[in-house]
Length: 258
Ligand code: SAH
Image (cartoon, rainbow, N blue to C red; front, side, top):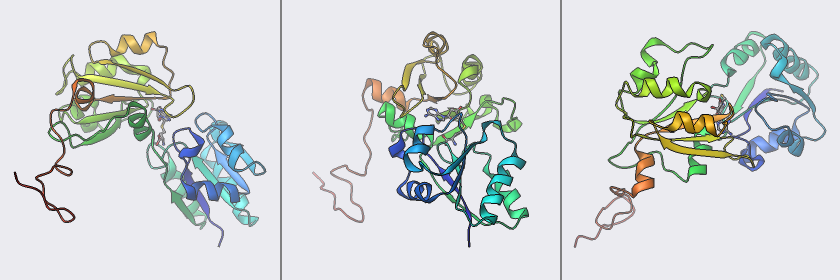
């Protein structure tokens, strides 16, 4: 049976799509993708002959109609999303439409920009005794955020934060974070266009990051990373993980007690 594949294209670099995603793209007859975020070169590299629609100017009804028509014609249809489709991808509503039409679908995950940004910085997001929790969040924009998830509320936890869709409101991000567990000295990094050839990184603290972001003229496609894990990289590690510690025993290794 022909189904629609929702595929995560990854953060930008054409090699950061999964092997499965790349195969399905190569086999695709019809591709609907967000031209504002997914690199057209990536689409062209994998599917030079496919019929391609840019969803940027289309409505949900229109993208669904293209995918449904492709399936009806026995064509292989792909809906390509930036990063991973499950993060701010608006795929649930698309899948609900396909359910309504009785059309099958599957999702192929991708590398979300949080992880591309961490890779650019060569940064682990979960360090022992610093933070073992990563929160993916955003400021409310035209899409509202539930009251209990306001950034000032989330900030009370003090975990590593990865903030999407908010760099244009960086002053508000800073103001809300300072209402929580973070201080003006808390380190922040902003990575724009992570994994693209023109990626850009700005590092600072909550005290100065807003100015630095404005000065660098960072575009919309950027991730804000916040938390003391960044400090550990800048200033040296406070503690190492147990996993590779000489004295730590686990299923695969007996520790040495000295
Ligand atoms: N599904 C995507 C997110 C879509 S929402 C994913 O998993 O990454 C769009 C937001 O993603 C942007 O506002 C920006 O915050 C972030 N983003 C997407 N690509 C990015 C990249 N290459 N570098 C930094 N941030 C990126």
